[in-house]
Image (cartoon, rainbow, N blue to C red; front, side, top):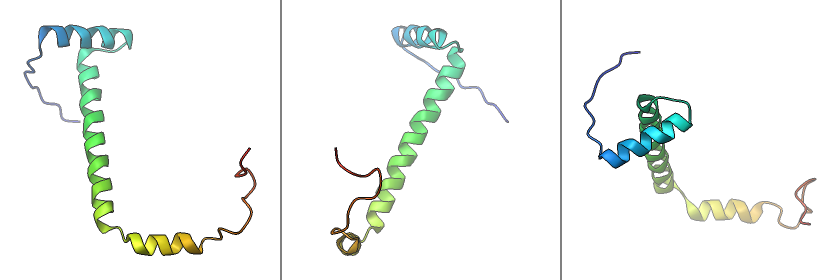
Length: 82
């Protein structure tokens, strides 16, 4: 894996809190920041994926399918309401 360096400027209070949380988690500040960036990227990609799927959605067709899905039949095993 290729690594690169980036001079990150954090507010002193933010850096101190990140160091504290990283230490509590048993990791380094560097690893903590790497994981935080990866989580943010994942969240952004997930949101984008749902937006793209929403744009392709055929709501009337989906409602037709749901209307046909045996609403008169009994719940399956384990799906019963208490």
